[in-house]
Image (cartoon, rainbow, N blue to C red):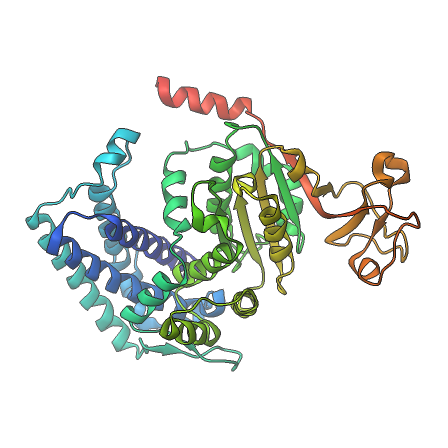
Length: 444
């Protein structure tokens, strides 16, 4: 039995269960049956999330020799874990079948009979009882866990409080959106992308920015979804450069007011940490207690300090920002980039966008070696470039953040400086291999 495989399976079950919870929360029909199923799935999700947090504290999977012997039996190939996996997949099949856009609209109606719901709930309760018994047998505490480094205790809250916190943090649910988008991709698509030198460099470099630009319809959003799924896979693999990392996402949409707010997007990152990794730090719990009672919103500084505390639990964080161009205000685009790159943690950022001039000019290809015109420092994450001097690239003048903030300039009065983010570039185009996969899917 491989602990890494066990945690990977648990992660899959927890993710699917939470997606079902999100779906059931949006359906109006179904009455008491829907609410009962929602409650049972929420209870199951909490149990699985707690189990995962204990088998992989701080995101690090326990060694095989440390794996509780009392849990070995239920995690056999044909054991309880497999039953749980089959259960959530069956519920997902009944509720959200893979379908055409027409059928997706049809799923807004309630598709289950009362008998279906009763049988499903009984099955969930039966498996939950077995799981709780096994955990009790090995003396696992289901109410709290202690950080191994002895620092701040993290609370595994009761299901009601955790659900309240997740709902309060942000109305955005990018995890559900990720699942919906990824289901529509075709197996094998974008395989070439993960072998691209630029992707490998970005994945293996600390605090790197990867900028993908492509015309409308080039598949940027599908690519983002596939990248997120691949990073999720790699975080559970050894020596992948991504192991135990936090994988987060922002899907920007021009007609969604919540995704137009930088603070709203920061809040969604905190929500994803709670959704995806099961536990939250005392910082987030305190933030919730303070503002939920007063019915107020946290400040930018509070969001940033809490996000820093959460991300410090992970060796590395990957944030995929899909559709930067979907932010209507140019000021918001720059503000989001500045905010994400200022997080005091190891954060790699991927950005996709249409090739709009005002967006492309905010990025500078890292392949072009640049040094500060004053202190000669090289390879800063972002810098300030003299717009007037760069009319001729051979006379480009750049300043690091420190020199710029100290008042250093190029020496010419009235010259304007613009912030540039040093990035790894890839242009997104339709690839022959992907086109063949797409055509074969619909022909055969």
